[in-house]
Length: 361
Image (tube, rainbow, N blue to C red; front, side):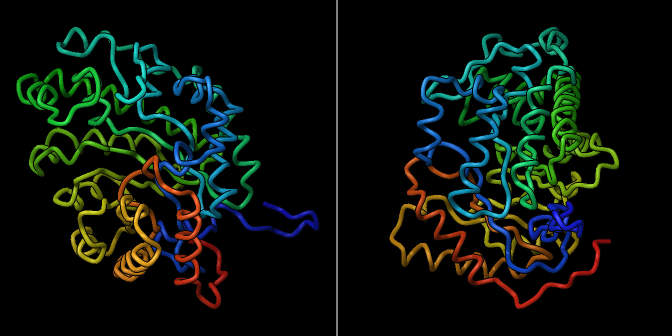
């Protein structure tokens, strides 16, 4: 970026978020919150009133405003694109409805090879709305980076096979074991779709991407390594030589963390179940970490919040780089003022006197 005087200005590529993701020195630990854009904010609820979730995700005006709201309110160090995990499937033509209080519901679940082959591909030309929203956001955000968003193949497969949200994911795992060829074809297709979705965001100006594999934690390490990891790696490989950090996150994945990194992540997201210093030991020194305050802590008293934030910050020092976040998404009943306080506290605890200004490698 260039200032009005013609001298180079701050750039998202040299932001603390991107630098922490690459393991470079930072001026302070960067902070953002999963689900920061959305249901905990009264301004979001007012803006979304009368508009269905999937419709909102395809409206560039709404996507832009909703994505910007938490950046303005909380002073976080990154924006995360307002979207939904099933959006690429919906845009491609799969009949999915997000039912309030339930989640995504698939009209015709995938139960056979024929069902897999009938899934429509995601055509890039259908993503004009997404590219428009990202370009607008990049212009509005200036030096603040925008993180692109996509659901990982396994998690999308669970919705398609189960027909909606599930606690046990029994149908998904049964299909994975009993129909290995169909399973592979399904995840191949979903990986291609996710890569198309992320490429559109990066090419429009997103500075980093996060792949959400929300339900990967239901798998054993052996099953993940054999039946899922290659497809998640295909998503990241699908970005080609686009030079943006890749963040990979799942819930309940403490036993999978090294494998999640091996899928191609620069940053491994960690849920609240595992201390960050132990996560750093498992992941190794070649990747940064993101996380991992328990979202429920934000509902506690201020002294508890402060104590837990300090603990996460201290344990995060064991990692190559640390992006402060929650261990999952912001809960709907969270007081937005607490999120603002957490961002300010992390910045206060981690601000360094000066950061080297040498160009990035």
